[in-house]
Length: 476
Image (cartoon, rainbow, N blue to C red):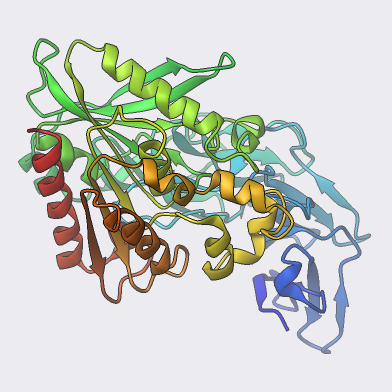
């Protein structure tokens, strides 16, 4: 028995469409999804005759001719590698068409920050004449609204401002957008008619003006840093409020989670808070990240700790070369996959003065058996752990724990279902019994998302622990 997924009701309220997994063992076959139609008047039920796969955000056209969903039909997809496209279903004959087969950007807002937006908004909206659909894509540090013809073609960016689209909605041809960027925590904008050639948005509500006016932050800088194989790594740098390139500062490389996500052009409270403590903080989007195309995202499948680590090292090299960075005073930290990379880095180099690993992955074999997404891990890591034991061991930071000699703070939440608390416990014990400098901060009740949606007092404690750790082991 599997849960039903995305659903939609036709404009005349007669038909319910929904996604359901039809396999007798859906846990082991998570992509065996079909679209079901239920006639709400007579109770008749039918299943769309089409390929199975990821199916999200069902939406009927107002005229009742079409159903659109976003997804893909790759039942062997790793963690969010396969590009999600909009698919048009002709309700008159059941024919299915990919509207953007050549477009190499992922649908959904995959931007990471800590100001409270939902992650991965896949919703689809229709123009009143049913000629176009609108949805969010992630692209090189932005999330943007694009417009796509119902007949197919290359999507056109409709909302072109840099930053993050937190939410958007449409009624008739009127669109409302919640948009955030470096200087905004999320403001509402409205366009009265998206079909006009000179369609324009006006800001109708701005949040947190008093707060933003009360703080002093330096502008965020962007760089494209050369790595291996002619890859350039997109990175965002936060500096202290009174930053001077003629002074020298300790630095922090902060790796994001996912790994199929992106740092973006958005206000990030935690990074500004760290910068305000006197650090240069750099946020890279290494290979494995989304927003840069399928090749960039899939390059670390069954190869964690390879191309991604090369990119992180390239960013650290770039930092070392900057005159405003104190050499040998660089730390590394990150959460989830970013915690994985922190563990990996400290087990492979002595270049970092210290680290903080948060809600991290440590042992892939145990992770596959304890994570809420464990049934999908074999698609990411080259088979089940018993099929690829050497690969799992090679990619596991725990394998290299004996080489971790620099101070490490481990932060983890006891109700984390994505990366279970046992991951942190294994790493702590492995370092403690070897006499390493290690501390373990456990949070009761909190989930994998403590840093973004945890209880406020615990978020403060967490942040203060970072400040204290870097003060002790990075500044001295």
